[in-house]
Image 1 (cartoon, rainbow, N blue to C red):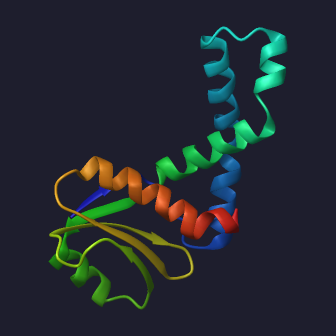
Image 2 (cartoon, one colour):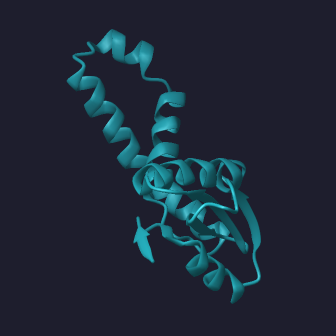
Length: 136
């Protein structure tokens, strides 16, 4: 079993605190990206909206989520010891699983065969969309 990322809030309140904490970093990333694209002040004011910064915050938060990857058997063993609501996408006949243990006893999982990095990135977006978007 491998672990990718480090953000694993155990409660809704912890998730909200972590989400708030990445806000300044998201603003800095957007500002520095606009500077690298040579936006002048007018273009910056026109194009860098609160929605742009919020999208950056969402993406930054999601990209830091802790995701475990393992064989189907290891995942099933891990899950057997826990009472969780499971949101699983993919096929049961695939040999690998990526999952995020979200607050309030929810696990978001996706099956994959070979591309671990792609599976982790996809799962993070799915976890954000299915668990965190409404919460945050």
